[in-house]
Image (tube, rainbow over all chains, first blue to last red; front, side, top):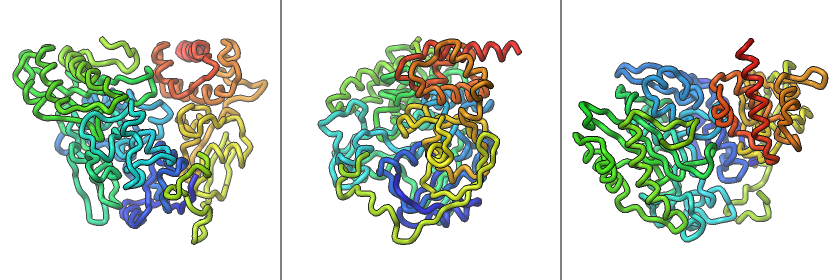
Length: 337
Length: 178
């Protein structure tokens, strides 16, 4: 474990002051950051413990949605009665990830800010442009079963590991942040970014900024939805491919649909063109297949992960079928119906 | 994580920073007993329990939150003690396996694990039992499938999973009848 200085502010303004400067890290649940500090991957000289800030509530918004406090735990969020009733897609995605112990500690802000689980990022004995800019990418041409097939760059083929974020992308959530220059609201699709030539930047947070909450819009998609996660073990494994679908049907035609993919890119992967071609059509396998082709257009395997392309195509079709039928994937009985 | 294998760029640098880093006063209640401690910020709860307080029931398996052997209850909720910095837990109440039961006064889960032969080497058992106690308090698991899913954070290299699920289900059913 590295050595670092420690501060435990009790109000936001103090936290932002403490969080300014180089090599400072905010610490919430710690399930990813503490691990990265043990691995010498994260090396802050100062850790700002934000767990005493008043950001743990889940509240109604004036717009008719819900505001998830950045420090509400993943468990509190997934089992919140309002989340379960109105945003079951989010509840399902959270419960598809990690373990009960980790969800009890992990917070909502921490979940969307967790780092990739690329093995080369974690192993400081191998090159990684995300961990050490300019070193090169250890995953290119090597073992890359878990890596990205969409939106990659020659510098980085890492994926974003969160399940929760995939559902938040489909729900068109907004991320509320604060910093020395004031508050900002970032649409979820703009929060995470593709690696391009700055793979060390996972998201669009500015230095010293802190997530304070995540807003869910009023559209709930509580009938036609599914979170389908495919992985190497039945539980406690990151997604090889996951699909979040939020759909609204009117007279058996698709009136609205959002599709987001996990495990395939540096951010939850959405393409509005794929959603648009489903509008007004009857929900059937053929139409879903066309949407899958658009979503995966340009997908490129890295060798060991070529299987993800046909797997994603089938998972998209199946998740859309589950959503249309109102039979979402169970996160307990893992059989895919 | 051997220091010798690190490249120059990734060398964590000197252990002692240029300015002295202080300890932090922390008050933590562990198994009902309050401890006033002065801790370096990088000490994990697991290391505090094992190395400083000699409560060695909680085990260090992977030290990365992957195996569950270090599971304890923090303010009643099960968590991996290897991933919690102890200084962040000022004011918290911790229950470890030592606080759940003792020889001659076993916790019902401990008795059920013995009854159902739910371990072989026993290394994962304290974490399994603390985790199972957390599961019961949470109240989200009723069926065998649900127990298995909710216990997926506790690995057993001996493969006693079937008997572990049996032991937990017996206690769940007992509590439901009560």
